[in-house]
Length: 220
Image (cartoon, rainbow, N blue to C red):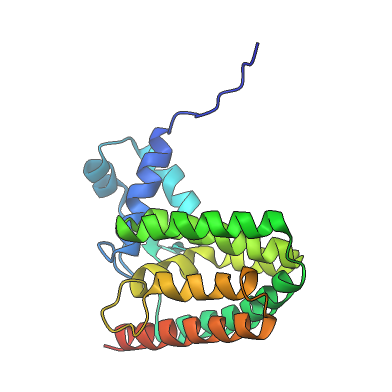
């Protein structure tokens, strides 16, 4: 007898977490906005205990910060912060894709191919939460294959802010190349060309364009 629950039910907290996270990603809750418990309870239709739990999770993700005598607000995101995140991403991701290419296995190739297909479907559905979820899995695969475990921990600590920037820039009409195509180019350089330098160049192109878009948005 197999008692394992294959598809555990989504909890109320998880549903609310997705709702508030998405509200931050889309700018419904802008940078610096106070998150008042009573208002959130009314908007979400849940108890204060659920709201407090959601805020704790979002604080851990770097999307919310608690200010003395003010309470929780949406974490500030300006170009100074964003530029530092892009600089960190460039250094860590270029190194990771190079070593991922060198450590490539048939299993990693199949995993990356599958995730690229999932990502294409997520973009086609214009599902920002799914885009971010699949993108995170894809980069985790690259960093793990590269054996850059400490670098992955750094990226994961920044993941809330990275995801927020990703949501801001992914579907910009000012892109020369779509966000999906940029990521596909990185992956194909790894598993089709098996060319570490080409993969690094694809990362640089992807981050440079995203950073340019983010700078224009954040400085307006």
